[in-house]
Amino acid sequence: MQVKRNQIFCLCLLIASMAANSLWAQTPKEIPTAEPFTGRVVLDGLESPWGMIWGPEGKLWITERQGKSVVSVDPATAEKTVLLQIDEVFTGPQHEGILGLALAPNFASSGLLYLTYTYKDGDKELQKIVTYKYDPNNKKLTDPKEIFAGLPAWSDHNGGRLIFGPDGKLYLSKGELGSNQGANRCKPNEAQRLPTADEVAKKDWSGYLGKVLRLNPDGSIPDDNPTIAGVKSHVFTVGHRNPQGLKFVGDKLFSVEQGPSTDDELNLLVSGGNYGWPLIAGYPDDQAYAYINWSAVDGCEKIDGSVYLPPDQPSEKETKWNRQDYQEPIRTFYTVPSFYNFQDAKFGQLAYLGWATIAPASLDYYPADGPIKAWQNSILISSLKNGAIYRVPLSADQKQAQGDIVKYFHTRNRYRQVLVSQDGKTIYVITDKAGNMLDENGLPSQEPANPGALLAFEYQGQ
Image (tube, rainbow, N blue to C red; front, side, top):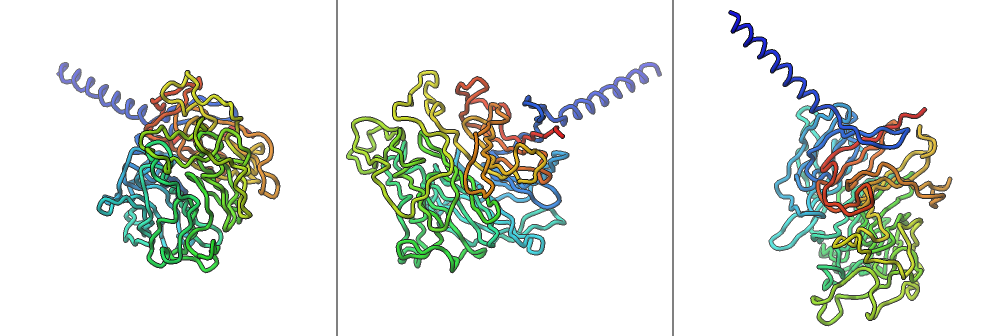
């Protein structure tokens, strides 16, 4: 009997230990951060999270770019539910897979989610927008309906942010596929090329690269879209590099896009506006950037195709380009002089991590009546390179950036998207599963501290 009692006692200890370990495994990991905030890991193990929105019942809906899925996460309990898995999705290491998502304005009655992702049609890599209907009883997204397809895609600069405006129209950011630089240096950059009437009639969307698009909810062209160069199309704005962030503040549409080696941009988008790329990066100041059409150079496949300004190549100064429809950014990250050192030895083979850019991947708005008074009426921008949130205060009319840029919550991660909680007290961030970034000491790293995670930074002030 004594042996059995000891066995039972040991078994109870084992069960208690396993329960304690399980509880410990679910305890959120703290992230060191400055007061009056605390930081924690809500959930990790996400397969390259890319897009994040507020779904029903206070849940966060997140796209897993490489996981080919949409998941729902309860930010209070970290409970994760897979809402959708899409076999058709084509994934890649960085820019391909499931990207942005947006709830229909009438979601309460329609249950419609809009989703954009990359796919293959034969040898062609393309992008589409599909709607799904949410079944609240089974917690699933069903009944897919393709509303817009055949948009060119590639392994670089697909853009991909999806958002509805207060006008009921759907907006999609589209990059220029990394053309005219690096491995894509022999492909002409078409961010300034406009679609022809014949192309639009044939549903040839090749002229849509480097643009922000505006669509009706059924994918058609809105009647009040701008007519640019005599053609009305889905094109809302022109001349973008890789715009990965879109956010409406009232009726104003803000965008962030990644610059080349300088001049990431925060833009205020206006219908028919031209934002300059690739002829202008940041402001037309002739500082540290000039457009070189590498794709037109004989033997382009043998040249470096760098995005910073090299010597001994014919180039076009920014100030040479003069257009009435050109729109300057309201803030850059960062404008530097032409003598800036783009090859700092301390960054080694990852020299681009030392360039004057933050690689913005998303933005959100901190409201004018939010509980964090110092943050009121500010744009929040997530950085891939620096693993941080940058706060840009706005003027009272929200048409200009005002005051200093402030950096928060730096960790050794790539911050893919930032989202403010509904009560304004928590800042949520999703992180890339892998990639290059700067560590706590400002040195290159390839080991994120929290790969594929949902982080929460909570305000503890009055």
